Length: 80
Image (cartoon, rainbow, N blue to C red; front, side, top):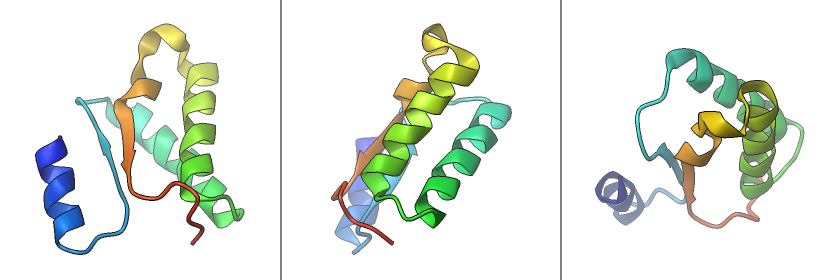
């Protein structure tokens, strides 16, 4: 994972969000919808990811561990 993130960051990408392991398409779509809804509502990238993790816990449970998969490389307080 770090190799891919590092390649993007070294090429000038300011933020990279990736998964540490494969997750299902359904869970991926859910996470993307929550994340982008938060971004478009004016939240920072870090807060959007935090809210996404909390919502994934609500929907799939703490034991699903899907919420732990997402990792942000970059500056969390940045807004888009």
